[in-house]
Length: 282
Ligand code: AMP
Image 1 (tube, rainbow, N blue to C red):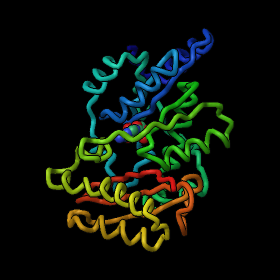
Image 2 (image 1 turned 30 degrees about the vertical axis):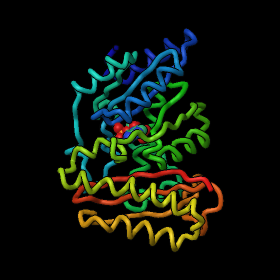
Image 3 (image 1 turned 90 degrees about the horizontal axis):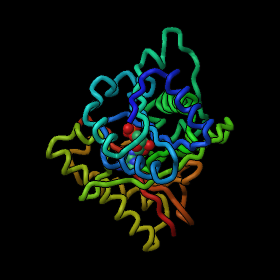
């Protein structure tokens, strides 16, 4: 595994591979790697000649009161995991090389970025779209891999790639979960023992709401009420930001579930914000 820190060297390395006709699979991450990230890496390895992973905690996608300064870091552990996974290149740039003084260009995906998480994290998806564009320009992947765990992010990246003719295949991979159903996330490390137990309510809520919908309860009022009641069973859930059913493409809230729907939840347990989702077909 080659470790590259300088964007220009990364770009030249990628161009060399492409000139030799080798396809590049790319997995962008913020590090503190877990099995969710590694499932994307394995899929990229299966489907491409060369596999590249980036680790960069992107300051642009964190709000002023968010966890940028305490975001979990495990650089040595991450590098070990990626070496064992036999990837070809780990790209780990410094913030100053990606955002030098005077940086002033941003990418904004209208409408989709304002919904769901966007309503609670202003500027978040602008930061995500900007860094992903930069990484795509530097790494020049053939395919890029994202997790369904961050469903809205995947929809926004697909839209950006289409609207801006980036010509990269976006592959969305299933959410990897702990044994009790909690979606793996680097932020789970913030939870204490009690909060960790309470967090299982998110997956339980999604599974039970899926069953409710499949039993014929398809109107938004009943579904929303059921989800809020279920999540509120845990006193450690301090804030439910959203919990409802949405159109999987437009992310608009649905009046009735008639074909495929996205069940999505964002809440806070103590000070930790967690999200999860599930697709349901009727
Ligand atoms: P992050 O490091 O949190 O920015 O995540 C990097 C990539 O890993 C994103 O595409 C995430 O959607 C994906 N990812 C994070 N957690 C999971 C998970 N539990 N299962 C599958 N993919 C995940």
